[in-house]
Length: 178
Image (cartoon, rainbow, N blue to C red; front, side):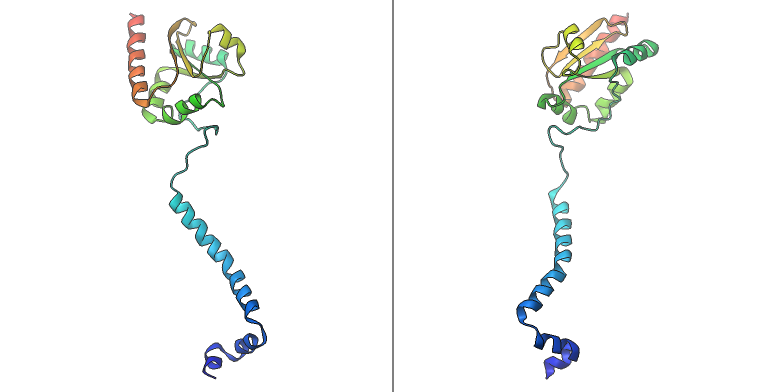
C-alpha cells in the first residue's frame, strides 16, 4: 500500500498490468537520446584537437597565386621576387610542409610580405615542371620578376630551418640588388 501511495494510483495500475521487460524497454528508450548526447559531448571534449588527414586540403595563411601569368604580372608590378612552390597534392612530403611550416604566422608573414607566392601542382603543370627541371616535390624556386632564377630548394625542412632559409634568401636577394 505504501508503494501505491508513493508512485500514484494511475502509475501503479500501469505497473501492475505490464510485464517488467516492457517497462524496462520503455525506460531505456526514453533515456537513449540523453545518454547518447552525454556520450558525444564527453567524446568531443576528451578527444582533443583534431589533426587533418594527410591528404586533406590544409587552409593556409599564405596568399597563393595559382596562375603563373597573373603572378608574373604582379611580381613585375610590385617589384617582388616570385616564389614558386611545386607540390603534388597527394604527396605526403608536400602536405607535411603545408601542415608544419606554412601554417606558422611568422613564416607566412615573411613569405606574403617579401614574395609573390605561387603554388604549382606538378601533376597538372607538366610544361612548367619540364621547363624548370623539377625532379622531386616539394621544390621551391625563387625567381626575379623577369624569370631569372635566384635560388632552388628541394625537399622538406623543419620550421626552424625554414626560418633560417628565409633569412638566407633575404640576404641573397639584397646582395644581388647591389
